[in-house]
Image 1 (cartoon, rainbow, N blue to C red):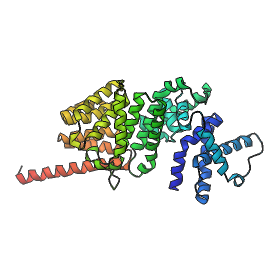
Image 2 (cartoon, helix red, strand yellow):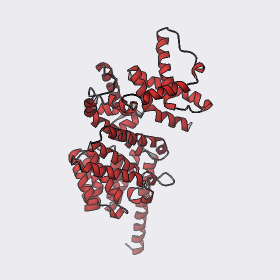
Image 3 (spheres, rainbow, N blue to C red):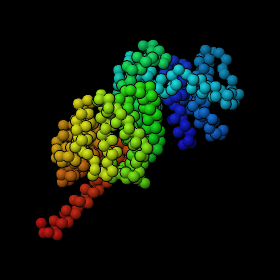
Image 4 (cartoon, one colour):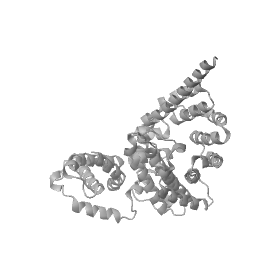
Length: 423
């Protein structure tokens, strides 16, 4: 069943994009795809995977939706499923029509539709994450650092607004594509992060999100070949993804950047990413994705952790704070500041962030690490405890417990030393 889930996940964006183009309704397209998935779960284990799973799902989903409409209209239903079970010719014909369309990628078309200017940007991105990538409301809410109910309402409002606005589900022209480019790029970045941030047992299941985001970024770059921010976005995804083989140990535990075996990093992806960011910088049009890619490039160019240019990374994060102010950006900058000016300066920087990052796992993890470096064991223990409570995965919690264990051992060793010295 694992291969079926993987096939359905991979096919979802293009299948829903084609169904939406056919039915002109988001809910109908989603329901048609779900119906097709249910039929696939019944048919594929017995018959094996079809030659083109995506075309199969589009064909079956479309027929299921038409059948539903006909039944509601008291018309004759479609023939029984076994009478149309040989879909080879239909799949081939459908695949040829998809490949020959003016706008070659249904996924990207769907992204631009979800990022319609009738919607606020937050609703655009949330809707695209739900419709295109099939992320759960909980996963999307975590990406936005908001509650599930708030995100559910945001997505519901987005769907309603699209329906009320009678948004045309057609391929947008060049002017419309340019207007929506920023929202589409942000959506691709969030999809990548959802896959990249997964750990433990969920990591293999979410890895296709990274592949899909990189594929979409490359496709976007082909459409906007002279846009430096899209070069920066693509470079950023490639450079981050290059570290994947070294990010977890054999037991699935998180391995921090400075502890990773850099020999495992994917040099082909690094070379592609470095070439893209160097090309983007030559345009002299600074943007958030380019700055983040430049930070990733400094890590990629460091043969050893001690070779990392933390002073330059600090400057780049300062530039990112100007371009895209965010408590998470400041938190990331604090890590560089700790390397350059020490943990006390970094701790002073993040303390004001507490109200806005009270539910953020990484805030308490960084705070605990800084306090531990400063020898403030009790406060570090408290911060690590809060981090464990906020952890999104078992792997994140296990990583913090490792720090706690180390802190306890150091504390016990110090007490033993004091006893032996007679203090």
